[in-house]
Image 1 (tube, rainbow, N blue to C red):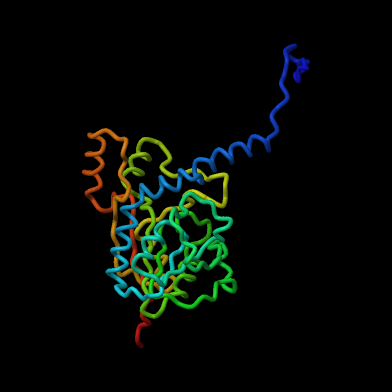
Image 2: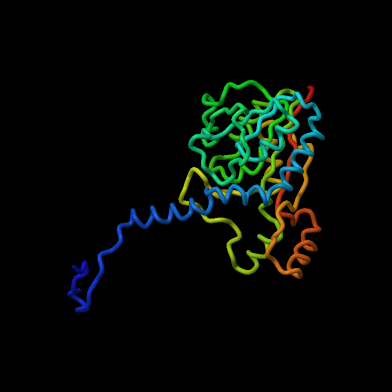
Amino acid sequence: MSHSKASPHTGGSVSHPVHPEHVLTQLLENEKAITCGEQSRHTYFDTHQARFADILRLCRGQVPIPSARVLDIGRSELTAYLLNFYPNIHTLGFDPAIDDGGHRETSDLKSVPHIPFDLLNAHVVSSWPDCGRFDLIVFSEVLEHLCVAPEFVFALLSSLLTDQGVLICTTPNATDISKRLRLLLGRNPYERLRLYSINPGHIREYTRQELSDIAQSVGLSCIGHHYFNWIQGSNQSRIKTIAKKLLRAYPSFRSFQLCVLTRATPSRP
């Protein structure tokens, strides 16, 4: 039996519209298959190995004590890298039972203590976790996914640092050369909001000056800043690859940035 009926205006047939909930559910599932599937985890690991290695190297330079108490924000394969040098490591973030984001680890991290806390609740100071303080906090590729004022998050992380503790923050550079060129061509260089809120894309990216100002506003000092090209395209022409390398020789044109933050020392009267 046909599910179409004649239109009183055209005399033709009109199909029943697909229910919006079905359309949205299908869009959501398609997105999750790409961004949260097992393949996405392995792809993420393959493309970010250079970042993991550089972060571990920089952490060891700032906090060279293997017994240091370390906190990694967001459970990922970076945690496994850090665990190789820092056995006393904890993680903080979504409950692993419900976190199926594409950044999740591929290694077994069951032995690593986890502190469940949603950073979107950082604006509620009374909800901050009571988990002691840490000598090193690694806050890598998380900030850009948060739809909460970064001052709340940095204030929380500052409260979890020891007096001599170090906070390593990495996040995309909002004004790298590829974004500038896309804008010049009339294209939006930033990711659209995703349908699956548990694995959001990039909500807001920051410049070096913004990061420094935000940190300073909550009592943190930026004692070091670096730009990096951690992800190199593998399916690009040789000419395009060379052009990108030449353009990104200028540090502020690079795609990623790293800030080394400490708690500011109160000025003496």
